[in-house]
Image (cartoon, rainbow, N blue to C red; front, side, top):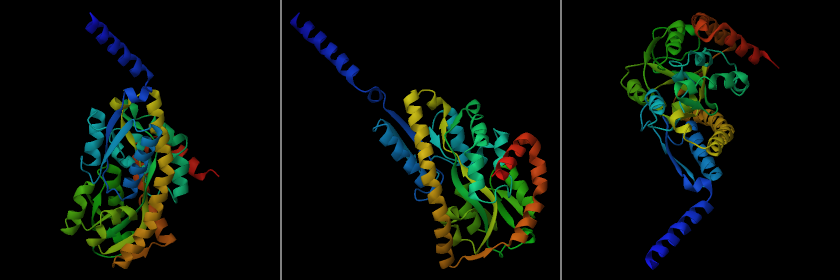
Length: 333
């Protein structure tokens, strides 16, 4: 009998002890974060800052492990894994989402934004929120918008100073139709490739060139297999930190708030890193022999004019109303 009383007392003590613990300690959360680029890239540093903030805000109860360099797959594969619930986080460019949410194509309209400030006005405002609201129905939750940056063209043939210089180049395209149609409009031959395949394709001359932000060109060491960098600024890329909705739905409101706040706080840091890296990467690659050229305002305007058929082609899928909302927001003081 004494043994029974002892066991009961121990059980009661254990229950009382558990009840006294903070709620978060009772349900520690573990998650995987898939990252396409290296840890030192602007994308990778943004993820590291996000994880650091989540750890601090949750007092160590939300543990997120990052997998860099496409270790868990490319953006398309990993986004699908989020929908299935086998990976919890990733941060692809918004272009990855256009196959399931057509409205995101508006952000890929070529020459849409003239500068980073215009992009921020749209992404951090009502249009950005409207796009995020479309994701849960697809099994995803978007937390914020981070910066990939303005796309610039590299190639192994010649500088691109005018629209005609794109003519005939085999040019890597993002795996989205609007990217491919933009290159066709400029006169290049698009070749869809995922990021992990890009270096080898350029090295073997399977493709002549590609377009990515300068910081990404440096992070992937593409300057080793390219000769020219032309500052075409033909598209703006935004990253979007995503959470698997299956994972999100299991979280407490407090944990969701922590993730949301961390993503927004990491945003300013990540954008700062992206802009600093764009400048430093350009200088560093030029010092190693990459030939860099500007594009004049007049030729930039000609390139923008050449891609207007792409705007017309994709406006029906994003809607005239959304395009007007974006252009009005850009024009607003």
